[in-house]
Length: 277
Image (cartoon, rainbow, N blue to C red):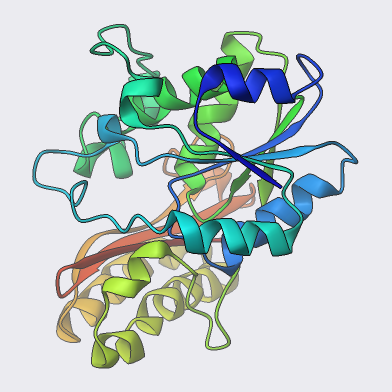
């Protein structure tokens, strides 16, 4: 496995456009990332993993400066998972000048849920993913479903720009108790880690209740939110949406494929999760 730091070195290591599978990450890897690598390997192509903490998707008050950079450890994990190339550019390599050209996604999809609470987040995500796609030129790219809205935004970007990339979603990897794996779980104290499972449980309770009684959707959302607050959480949203467009289902649409999504802060750590049903 090679660890490369420049665009020229990466392109020299690949046979040409459309010849690899790609897993973009911000590093600080866990088993969820390694599952994406294994899914990418199933295509029988060289697997490229990028490690880049993208300043453009962090708001000024967020954790860009303190986000863990663990390249040496990450490289060892990726070697064990079967990655072929690691692309770990410095910020000045990917952004040699201020990135004034940016990709602005459709507000109807990108300014709700995560985009509402993190303004500009998906512009930062789309801009770096577009740039990475131009650099790596993969045939297929694998993203985790834990970042459900992000996956939908990227798929729509690829469709509208007619990019020659197949975007695959990978199921969320969870700890034994059901907590969705996330790099930010490392911010949790021991006590908070024990409490953290409450988010995924709340989403499952909402989904189970709506399955039994679709008319109870609003009550299920409200009660789950109140319960998390009573446990000391600060929820941003716990909500049921249509899977195809992330809009709230209308009364006649409750038999459509749905997803319940949640984002909440426990102490200083903001966690997200979702469950399709």
